[in-house]
Length: 283
Length: 306
Image (tube, rainbow over all chains, first blue to last red; front, side, top):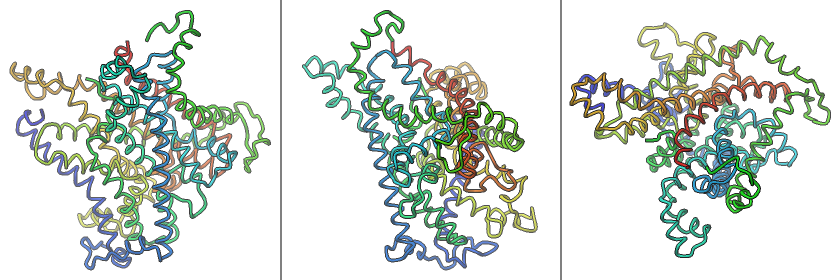
């Protein structure tokens, strides 16, 4: 439609997009360029715009299990993978039947429950931080990854229910009705027809939930103390304070942390975009 | 929905018992990790808690915590910062995102790639983003300092993050960088619902580009705009990572916002009661926004549920 708005608009749009893309991408480029510099090359003013002698040393230190830094870093990465996967699987497993019920059934209290799910998006994380901290202390889970897996459900679960409901809404109910006529129970129809048909939606939801957990910071900052249990998000901070001026190392670590998220996103961009906008747009 | 207030609610509950089995696990988890915390925050807000968090020793203080929060001068300064931060970030992100959506709407080669590139800041972690921007804005070796010197704006690198005047705009810049593409994606999805025939018909009738935009496109985007702005407002009010990592509220509280201040009171000074009262106030603000959000979002849902 923009294209049809005549040439001056199109040109203005193109220029604007070019500037905006530079704004979005250049900080990432600078992160990458800094990460292949030596400490000495990074601390130059004016900066070395193009590294004179690029090096992968920062990466090999971070990813080598023999060095101290590398050991810690790899541990953080494993911790992040474990916490993100576990909370995603748990959240989606609980969300699938709930979202299906919200999509298909009309039971007393449905709207109330569903508004509760929606409103959760509005709760400030700090409202949960203190009571959950006390709860975790009481359960003896402070400084364990179980505390994170559990608390990540505070955002992962409502989000998953909301997204999955959108996907279920788009599956024609006639398919289930046909299965019911053929004698399948309602639960079997759900399990054998609806779940397989909505697997793209389930995958998209899982990835969204995984990315949120992978990037989560404030709970991990508050609940974890033990050096060996940190996730990447808080682990980076530790590198930063210990090697206060090691900017190339920090940029390399930030880059490694961003790679899985960006890769997942680029591969599944279509689903991700759909997940983001699900529900907000009704034609 | 059927008849929410019809007699025989118990019978209807019994009829639907199987439905509840589907939602039961989710409700159980939500009661534990959402319901209980909300209740407990409100409860704690009426108490003074000891610094060792031995909750048996807490003292009931009534509304004292609320009065102290509402009366504190530092809270008033933080409120101004919070308003600037929230409204500034939201408006800028929305306007830039909307403009980007308009420019991206249509088909041209490389559109998918461009959209992907623009979305990268939104998907990477706020932690990584904060460190990158701290490095870009570094007082001695930062790119921004070098560029401002190269173009002759200053004769020495500027310390953006350590200056009470520039720190909040700098943080807003980072935040807008991080979230404008969220607005873009939402508005892009909204633009897809604008009926093409209508635009074409208007063009046939001789309506100019601006007219078509203003009288057809904009009215169609009302609902999605409301949802987008509300989500941005809430996200910005809830923002913690960028201010916390980049400045920790400094210098001299110039970038302190509600969330970072609550965190400081709770986990810096270990005053859970006071911080809870503060959270409850914030919570009420959020719920007000939440009311409008749910209303905008469920418009049409109840109709389709009939």
